[in-house]
Length: 88
Image (cartoon, rainbow, N blue to C red; front, side, top):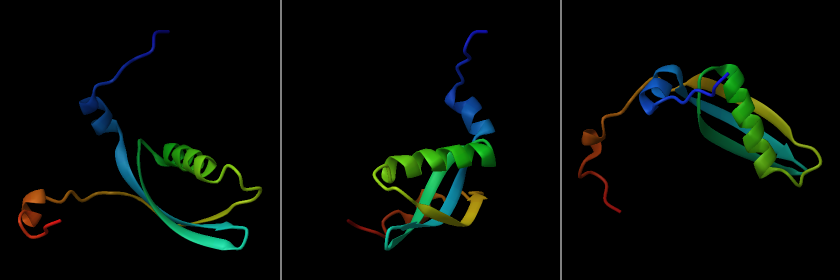
């Protein structure tokens, strides 16, 4: 079976942006995270989140994770509303 390549347009139809808010308890430290993950479904979000955790906490022996919120981003903000309001 040949690998299939998808265009950006095809990926945008099948994939969504997911917002994942979670807390990581590592040793005596607790850190709150907010990640935006581009995935097709919840299981793919889970896989991406595990990759992110492995990358960020690879030297830790134990990491406890509490997910507070995991939901698809459904709003798209028009950038023209913010044009000229904020300056660096």
